[in-house]
Amino acid sequence: VKNRFNVHSQTLMHLCDGMHLFSRQLPNMGTPYISRLVYDVQAFSVFLLHGGRVSGGICSRLFSKEEFIEIVFCAVDSTYQTRGYGRLVMNYLKLYLQNIEIYDLLTCADNEAVTYFRKQGFNKHEILINPSRWVGCIKDYDGITLVHCKIRPDVDYLHFPISLRKQQIVLEQKTGVILTANQQNPLYTMNASSKPNDIVFLPKQNDDLEQQNSKSDIFN
Image 1 (spheres, rainbow, N blue to C red):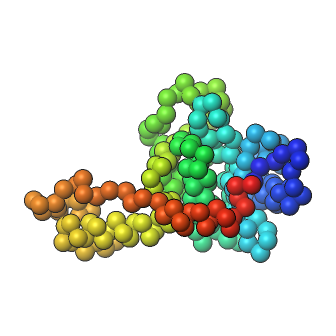
Image 2: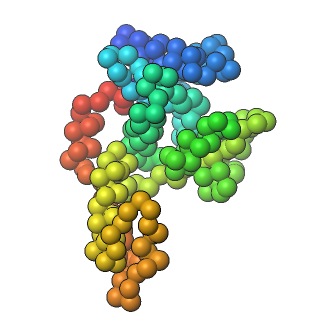
């Protein structure tokens, strides 16, 4: 969802809902600051709707020339937290970025949010993007941690659990070890005939992605 000078009224309603969601869940940011960024024509947001109302969302700024985006706000309504909404909205954002061929995500996470971003594939130890691309674009604050996520164009993030299970099946076939949550990675117990190169990223499910694009309005 993106604000435009001729934006549809329904889009404005979603932006308004999203602004109130960020204000409730991120009170330290201040409503005026949140409102200015959410309605900025250079920003875009991905929202999850529950019962027609925004229940989760991510607001981002796109830096086209530098080829990366900055996540400005990320929040899920307290009623729907711990239900996987945060992961889902992040996966929709990654799907959108694959479509526009932007593969670098940066954000400044406070101490409480670092764990969430780590689970979504963000790295706080290695910022794998040239500083010349983002220094001066992103403001650095005390008490926050800059984290980076590299998006792979060949990974289906929206159907990641299914893809992960398929990867587990490949590992089991190559190693002869049944993969469970408490076992070590079977890559360390591969036999002589197994090759690490046999484990590859599964391609995206293009048909499913086209269906998702036709059903969802998050890219409008």
